[in-house]
Image (cartoon, rainbow, N blue to C red; front, side, top):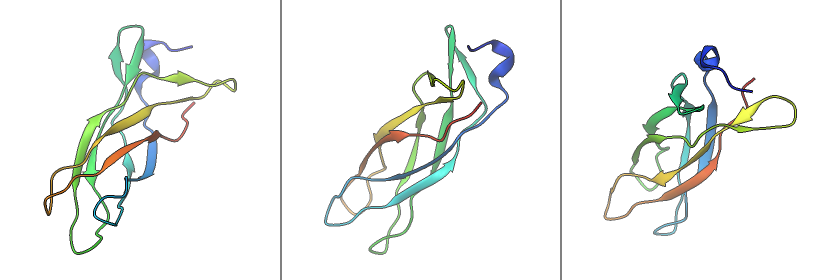
Length: 100
């Protein structure tokens, strides 16, 4: 289970955004180190999507608390919306890669 000494880790992530205006974008990156959140922890993330149809979107957020798996690893949920570009946004939601 989680202890405050376990904050020195990051998670990779790679998601595809929702389809809006007949296209999607890829979001990929690495979170910050863990941040205490009650008896659990979260991570910050930010980045720029892939370029599609001549534009990109910025995104940033905070993951949900750790979701522990049977093998002792854990994942975090990422969800939100991208910045407004070319009069539209994209939604995203997914789980980052596990960390032990």
